[in-house]
Image: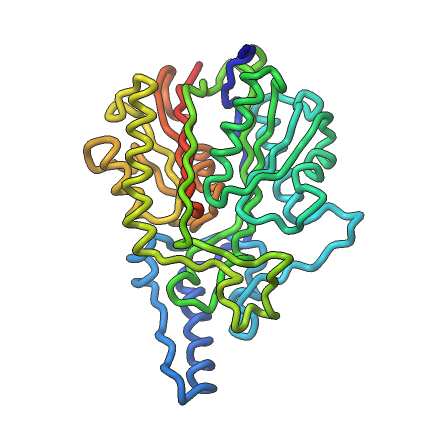
Length: 369
């Protein structure tokens, strides 16, 4: 028997202080290309990247990162985060805690009010103990925590999981934390993808409406979908580790067939949204705002057009991709966090993520107070 009605009480966001512009990134990449081509005159030369290429391909103009200088160093071209001893808070937990604290503060909650922590992200920095349990410990939360990974859909899958706990009466307050250090699994030497990812952490506090603050978001319905595909893949793992610097092992980092992903994911996600809206009795054309996964501006334009029935304005489908880059599961949550306060009582919107798996998640919400 269902005992609770889940809502989103608040969100939190941690943004790394350092940012890399496309101009900086292109200068670094092209310096690497010059060195590589000079060292391998017999091979087919690598092509330069450009600001125009990046913006046309993705809509991205900058991205925040945890380790800027090593990424831009043509001799390194990947983040370098000092390893911490086991008795110190790990870097992934640290940024997750920062986002979680902001969500708790915005909801007027104390850590002891929370029953569970779900760490939902695309890549964990270790296999175990679970990052969620470390975050739980750092915040001083009783109860339980666990990690979950559905790549770029992890946050929306986490929200439905948290909502199900509330509905079932197993928890009244659940933190869904998504620390995404995606710069660590990006091949910064690959022209087709070196510009895609950035780092960030988000948190979503899902609670029973009976204890929620006056201003919150009713969760009208959620839906999840997965379809197996190799078109977005990362083979790194403790059974199959990359060589130093990732040299000769590009499949141990992010790889994708971008055109196939675009062609297959857009219709899948649009159909999923329309079917769920119909099930909930929601007119998709009347949705006040779409907070879509921030991976590619072209994909978002097409999906929003299929859902709304017209070309979406920036107000209807806001973008954070231009300044944050692709932050995997955190992208749609950043958009919601930064572009939701202005909506009016009763306005209905959609949080939607999609990515590797393939995976997709929808969370339809309505503003209260």
